[in-house]
Image 1 (spheres, rainbow, N blue to C red):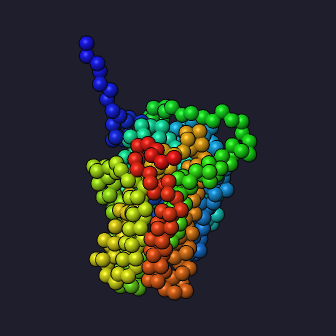
Image 2: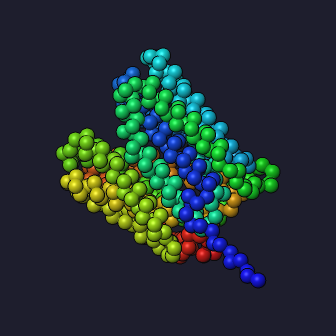
Image 3: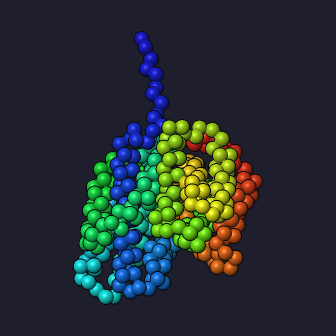
Length: 413
């Protein structure tokens, strides 16, 4: 009588049907958001010619996540995450239709756009924690690292090709651009509804101040999760150089818009290449040490970019920045999900989403402000050195994060 040998769960996220539809949803939504972002910027500037209003676009999208941080995470923990995503996508679809109606009305006031943007930002605020918390419900721990990597690659592909597609579509007609975004969002709604209902263990606690602040309380009580979230926040805050790319292209590299396009695309290309590598050769040991190593490399390649005076050094340097960031994102996000209990995962991811958004916004503000006083080269180089410093300091402050080895289970208590 033979005894069946148990089959180990696959480490490939695409093995699991639910994740395949989840990845497709991410890809469709990311493309739609990129197309709308480019089209909205063009529309606002075309109507007003006011550069300041372009800065308010990002603020309108970010503020709802900040103001609703306590509610969005709790919602992701208390209700069906798949249905939350479906509702959010339906609202985003209505926003795309609202933009479509606006451009066809040929209005000369842009305040309706900002009203729609706030609604869109609110939907995105609820979408983030629900989507980030759903992935661990769709794959076993062995496949979580791969899931995070390939899902990030979907966003990176959209970030590279989406703006170009948005510009081309808007060039044909604003109606075509927003209509395409609406179509992609409609397909995303169908895709998310095709995800099989996953197991989700909700919290049995009554809603109180303790449960509302549960995400913050858990983060600050767990050194590994606190280290993972704060490491990304401060490294990006110091090392972000995207806001200065137009200055570099024009004044330092003496290049044109084509080179600027390559500079913007380079980090995403590097990230996708690294994602493909990690899919083939996943990280199986010494994850914590590799995390700090690649955050340090993120800072080092930022310094190389900052010192470069030729596009053919700057572009590969930015590609390596993106590749290093992809490794750190994969490790950091996987470790954070492993260490976060299911019942508070939504609230923790809500805090994480706001921290990431804040670090991106504040990182661009830091780079622009420092560049104003001491020049763009010094601003980028100092930021890169600062990111290296963050990696060194955090590796000492958070030894539990540094000593984490596996990306399939906890290794350090």
